[in-house]
Image (cartoon, rainbow, N blue to C red; front, side):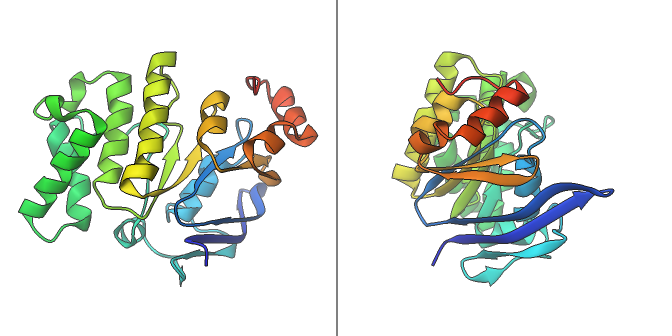
Length: 243
């Protein structure tokens, strides 16, 4: 059985279809990439899966339970967490306090939450900044903080929305390594939206492609990058090359 089953999901806004009959299964331990031109429906799908939006039709099962209609905090507590493309730190709090906000999700005590938070900070490379205000972090560190806070919730699967946007090539390489380590060391399944093609093609076991809310391709990175429909969608949308 798949860890998460997305079945025939459709969603529209004011008569315009954002997602049409989308089905994706993700197995435990996989890294699945989700790509497509701007406006393809990628973040809308993440919002539906994580309870920020309700679908008009379809079903989402997580570990066998139908989670459509659950609140985002209930989905998070069940072990399905997400990051946001536009980072959402608590700027008035320290780095450690930001991560603690996530750690309390899966903890039974303050001591356990602190242990989880410190472990996540060490893993993510921000332990030395733990007492600094989130306001003073660089964009790379804020992206890192967003991911670390999600990991502190002890998820089974993490949905990552463009963790590499705005990063320079060296920072992208660092994030690629971190994402690979999340799977290999933390044993967390990953579903990732990303526009940096060299990154998503190098880390994904499978890639799913959306265009105008429709799934136009799914498969291993090499077959997807050679798919004529995918190439046409990206060239038409002005997106970067797959090279």
